[in-house]
Image 1 (tube, rainbow, N blue to C red):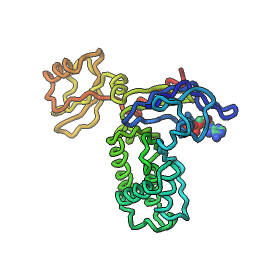
Image 2: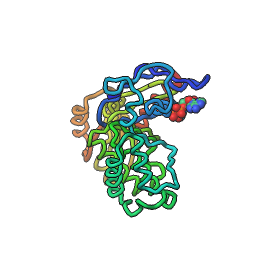
Image 3: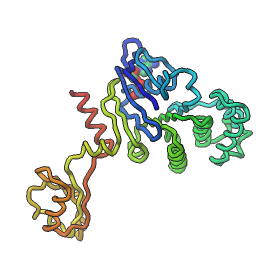
Image 4: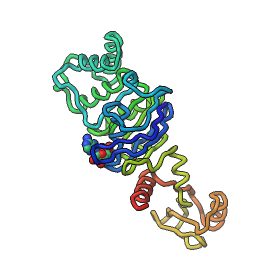
Length: 301
Ligand code: ADP
């Protein structure tokens, strides 16, 4: 869908992106991760054509990315901003028309969206008269009203209470289901765990990790397992390091790590012969753990 090839960008002496390449496949949600100052916003601003790259190439659906593609992109910036004195309906239609929709199309789509988000009664009210949460929803509608193929979301949940964050999450999943390609930049790791299919990690202007989330978890796993047993007689297991997670008296939970690499199936067999096993699960690293490990390595490597 989008090929980013060897893109570099500096602001004066500050290098923000260095020789950055990334393939964003069509559909699905890609998490854009990285510490503050890594270069994420710079990448987003280049993709949304707010700023120009210094060098490199970006191909969108086989064509060099240019202004003719702006209408295919939707961008929800972290710093939100609407024209507060405009009326809700007017503003949504205006923003959709800026993205190339006809007046009729813009009106129809804007009406559908305000209905969908229960804001129909506010159509003729000025944005400034809406609550902060409602303004945030209007901003979300403004991002998607023109039905973009690529949606770039920068901390989309910030400013929402838990209930409305759930509404936005469901909308994001619905858009993904309809085939929209989504780039999600966030520091909320639980959102990454829940929503992202792929992740790309930037550190100090360079890509340091990229791939399918489950495959990355699989390749960073550490031969650890989480088990629950009746009682707490873990001591009978030989050649296995263990760490108590919880002991309720009747049952206990441990993280265990065999000192030699073993297949999960043979480990399960050997320990179930010695303890009364209630549950057994391979322990995969969280995205947060992978993030910290890779950023650390890249800072010290
Ligand atoms: P992130 O979004 O990951 O926090 P940015 O892309 O905003 O990172 O920043 C990357 C680097 O570029 C940082 O060192 C930042 O200070 C610098 N930078 C970003 N925008 C500007 C700007 N407009 N002028 C000068 N330096 C900038």
